[in-house]
Length: 472
Image (tube, rainbow, N blue to C red; front, top):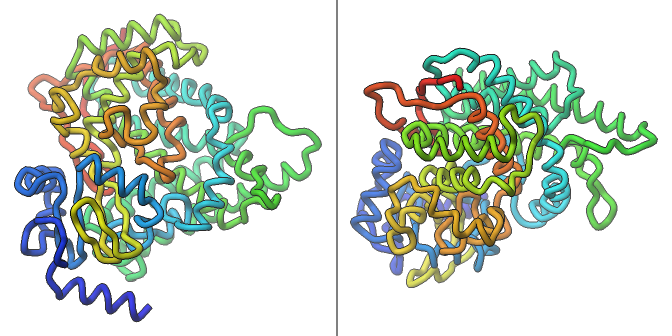
């Protein structure tokens, strides 16, 4: 709209507003894109945990302050919305799913999606998680040697996510089409993210055209699966006891007895693929890297895995009886949160802490900064899973992943009404994959290598994770 365009033009050419947090006087978009983590650390060291910026002409507030973060994510969640957030653009891949939608659309989709992510529903995916990991261990990791563990885990989590979404009975030919199209779409999406999305998706560049074609191929397959599964469920006289997530979404109804439309189903499936697969691979890759660099903690985790799940991990075991594996995952999420920046936009003029923010201001809450707050964490740069054990003696890990954690500075899956719907799935997957892996192999560092380098884009992915796989 013309008014929105005019407001953006005024932000680009004008100074930062009065009452804004202190920060650099010039536009710092290039510095931010060049090295996001170093830039964030430098800014907060110089100006404090809340900084006012101009990024690519946009007015932005970066914060790692626990109190202000709570205001944005929880206390004033209706004011700080997704729409209008700079650097978190929509995409034809995710559509208008839970990741980007707002208001009544988001509320209805969340209500319809919730049943698929209840604890009882998630547990039906546990066997797929362990079976897929067993295939990785017995095939790609069957011999000792050096592997890029991140690449292996990307393939694994894509397989798990696809199976969880579409079930065991997805025809192999359709499965190949789905994974192939996803990989192509992800590749181009990652390329756009690396450039800060400065090239609009609609611009007919060669990369954009190939990306659009990958999305079209994926749409064709996914819509076909949706239509086929809907027809099967309608014709079935009895409800299947163990349903995939697509079945759960197809059967879900809102307060008026209505289900999701075809397009909404497609958008939610794509959102789950985009948001769930990659972040799980990132989490697991960082966890393996930390365990390789901390062999004593790795042996303790492996011992617990054998005790709780058995040497071969034939069953799924009771994840609640594996506190140390849970602690490894929680600590990895603290040090390397896949979502290292969470974006919101002020829908109206608002008071935030001691600052005044005009409507249209983007607020970037940084778990990277929150999780290193020396006022909230002892020895924050150290990998210490043991720090979580006292808490896990009295609480479940899910309780720590609601709100901002017990110390008010822990948000690996977001917080408030828009916390990640797939938190329970991601945690179960991470614990089971680590347990099954450690039953069969040990992760060792490559002699002379350093800890894997981060390659922050939309997510905090590693560039690669070369580790020695040692059979046990």
